[in-house]
Length: 451
Image (cartoon, rainbow, N blue to C red; front, side, top):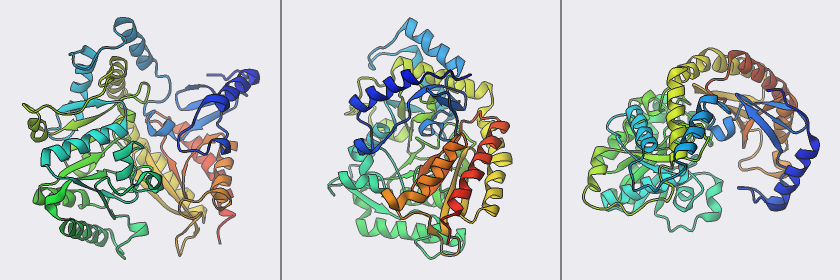
């Protein structure tokens, strides 16, 4: 894992990228993507030989780190045996991946519909909910992200929705609980929970329960800020769904497969949804894969009635072989337990210690290897370090923070006024402390913008 500098090769990679690659969520002429030469474990490096500790897990998916040899070998072996096969057939890798996933999902979510990623998992989950109920509307939360395809981006509750929201998607947004920035004037978690549930039930009543097919929630919202719901909230949403015949969809694309210190975040709250979406960590992102875990009741809807949906690469053998290997590695190496243990003993305490010393830290929250640090200009007023959806000069303080982290050898996950700490589950204690030290240095830069 010793990076070998090769700036000429890096320049060629960068030139080809700038000439031909169209990047997502970006103004193409305003970005400067890093040319990456290699990655292993919790690190990656550029062509100048500079190495970075990755506190982003890619896009929160390399739950077992980069280039795990057992998963690489499984992909190679599957490619030698059968690179691809149509989804209508029973294929060993596909069947085994479905079995292993179903063994770990909560309740009776025992049928697995495979997709290519998280966004199309959301698309199909909502289609299933609408067909199952015969109802048109979907309720989703502000401060959420569910994907970039048409339906998924419309149920998203952050600014990435705006450009694609034509107000015709049958989506109604509501406020989910978040005590630090409460929309309900709550002072305690109990108040926040009760008032958020009252708000949701009122929204259901005024939208018309008989028109609502599904409520979709990230079990723990990810990109929007890693906001664990207060005790009782998800159970209360489950009760409302049962009361009004609404399908509960939990989006575990980011929080699933060990990220929260349990196989699924739903396990933390003892709640069983009707549909659960997953992707990312299912095979550590080594080959694109996502899916929907389906309850017995909803699966029965399509027992003799065809489900009108599918994908050419549903359950792709290479992706499924990677999923089988990843799940087995997570079991063999105790990575779910490791994420829970180091999150509780190293990451959480380390971030809280940084919060005590840095006035730019307003709040630290999270669980397992899934944490957010809220950066503020003023702890008393909780004014964010940068405005909501800031760009350009308005975002300069966060840009300076990110640059300082990278200078210290840490690649940070930065979104709006937050940095998220989401390293691989098998990051070592020594590596975590290295990353916390780099964060310490970067937060000193953020402190310069505190009032």
